[in-house]
Image 1: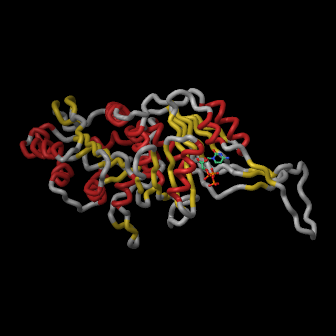
Image 2 (image 1 turned 60 degrees about the vertical axis):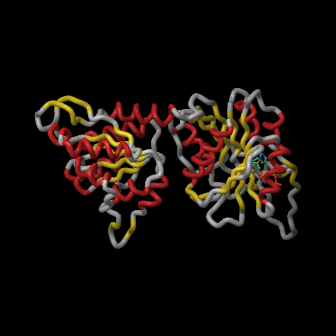
Amino acid sequence: MLLGITGSIAAYKTAHLVRELKASGAEVQVIMTPAAHDFVTPLTLATLSGRPVLTELVSGCGTWNDHVHLARWADVLLIAPLSANTLAKMVHGECDNLLLACHLSATCPVYVAPAMDLEMFRDPSTRSNLERLRDHGVHTIGPDSGELASGLSGEGRMTEPTDIVERLRSDLVGRSKLKGKRMLITAGPTQEAIDPVRYIGNRSSGKMGFALAEEAAMRGATVELVTGPVSIALDRPGIVRTDVTSAAEMAKACKSRSTDCHIVIMSAAVADYRPASPSTAKIKKKDSPLSIALEPTEDILAWMGRNRSEGQFLVGFALESDDGLAHAKGKMERKNVDMIVLNSLKDEGAGFGHDTNKVTLIGKDKDPVAFPLLSKSETARVILDHLESAI
Ligand code: CTP
């Protein structure tokens, strides 16, 4: 999410707000207006959020902070505190800093928590600006009544961080059909041992599966994430992570977890073959050619398709180079799955290792839907949106 902080004394509460948002599992990118720097230091917020704080559209020696990318990356934009000045600018579509540019580019829900002194809040211009912002579809949180920094008492106090987080949680999670659902998601590659030091593997980074797990947890699902070897650290509420190495270990972990899951998403790049007789000792180099006999691994997705529990929704991935749609549809029938996420090897920036992906979603009795190149978080969102409309 994007957290916009503007020039209001309530900005001092945003250190606490960032902590609360992080604790609830959000990834927080802070954007401060120049005036906000007078009230709280970027260092504090960068440390708490774990990301550099952004303020300028162009910073340093011509580095452009891409507001379009930031706005598309975010699943929610929260501006807290919202000053009377930024409020007025938002109403008129002004765009003279990074936060305002992100607001104009945002396609996600926008929330604001106004904070200002009593008379500023009472002023008819502020009242009508807030009304117009609501007409634009922006959600307002507060302000609350109480003691104000000026010493006056009345309306204008920023809603407490805990209450802001609670409101976001109930609005965003409350709407999702995934709330309360149990999900099994696989991620990453598998490694099939040749000998104690070598293996057959693939270039999957696990980013897509992890993005799906995070998005699903954000929507209120409880996620069993079974992952092959990846270098992604993830520790967040709602996700129970199990690390495995080989296809056989992944199969075992998935089978024991799938029975009571409402939804299973198999995004792992499971090896199709493994060495038939892995050597227990390191294979020594010789001058002659070396052949390794391979045997098929178990197709975990196909097992899930044969053994699915009542009402379970099954999603598979397909990475194809030619005739993608036809192959993916064939896979869907053969493995008895409800939805296939198709990647084409021909698409630049899609598939293994990239931060982006370009997918076509294929469901039963529906025309395939092709999406443009998106970040893996955005891709996770469109996949889960599609899934929600199918379940
Ligand atoms: N899959 C699996 N177990 C395997 C191999 C694949 O569960 N041993 C799953 C993947 O997680 C993915 C889907 O099957 O969801 C598609 O995998 P893919 O390897 O592309 O398809 P295959 O059925 O193996 O067909 P092919 O290799 O011919 O494309």
